[in-house]
Image (cartoon, rainbow, N blue to C red; front, side, top):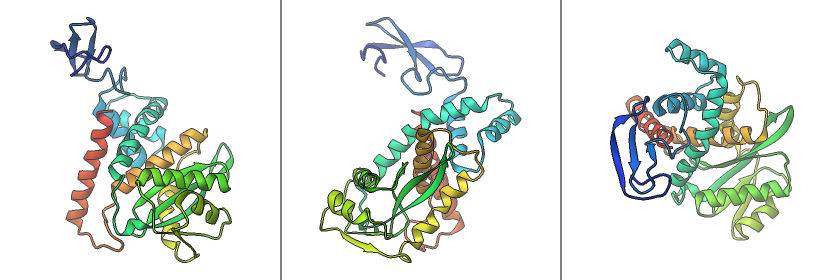
Length: 275
């Protein structure tokens, strides 16, 4: 392990550990001491990393408010405020989301060449905002972006984000009849991409919106645009990671469903614990 302050490799592990059970080190070049968590986003937090990661995972996965999670922790003998959980969420969600997007980048499947794009609505500080979302033919997530406006600039920004996230361009894109999509597709994705406009072909995406809509229904709303975009985007990443199906209408047994859920959960928790 290199020194988190000067980057030197002349590091010696000390015998004692921190109060949270983390190993301590000392740099022989700069003389400063640090521990396993000194260079992470969870440095100086009041609880071990595994507990914090589990709380943030439950925050995204299940329909629990911040105060619900605070009460659940109190039942386990751990006193933590809902504001502390909000702070953990703000620190860990971007790290987890970036890691999961890197795992998906370049994974070009046969269904990935066809994108279905639509937007749904949610309120931020009492104002309606537009959540752009895209999935492929098998229901796998392409990208999500929250915008205050539904116009040409927002459509172009979403297509640029989706292309950067996936690392390739689709062969065809299916959208609704909004007038900003044709020009945005030609400008960002290229003229060779086939654009289809159909109401019933986007039904799979309309149904997929239920995931985020059902999750935020129990919440008291978002107070800032950044918090809303962070939660909605990373919720989609975790939900996509935990999907038991790999193909559209695939039959998955109960045992395989449990095994895939356990494996995906370990991946998400490890990312947040090592943040």
